[in-house]
Each structure stands twice: as C-alpha cells, then as structure tokens.
Image (cartoon, rainbow, N blue to C red; front, side, top):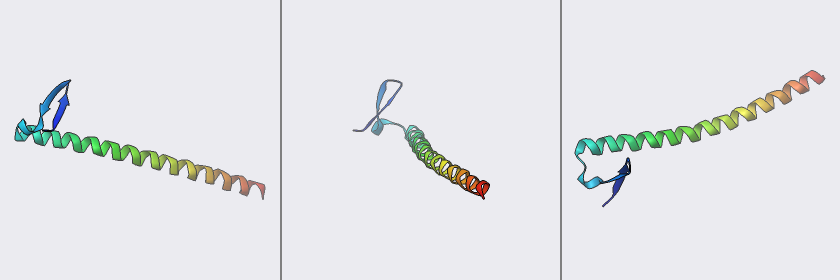
Length: 65
C-alpha cells in the first residue's frame, strides 16, 4: 500500500479519488521535469563556461599576432 505525504499527513494512494490520483500524477510529472531541467541547465552552464573560456583563449591568441 503506497502512501504519499502532503502537509505532514499520509494518504494511501489506493484510497485516493481518480481526480486526486490525476493531480498526484501531474505533481510527480512536474517534479520530474523540474529535476530534468535543472540538470540540463547545469550541463548548459558548464558548456557555456567552456565556450567562453575557449573564446577568451582565441581572442587572446589573435591579439598576440
């Protein structure tokens, strides 16, 4: 019997109404998307930093010529 805790109160998910189950599924989906997008943002920030460092290096090299 799986449970979900909301505002420090436990609910048996088998006893939830269909509407409550749909809302819980949407909440879980939103949480998963937030986690996915947070990870993607971190990866893109790392890539951006790498590109910026490479650009600085290229600009520094072209200034020496």
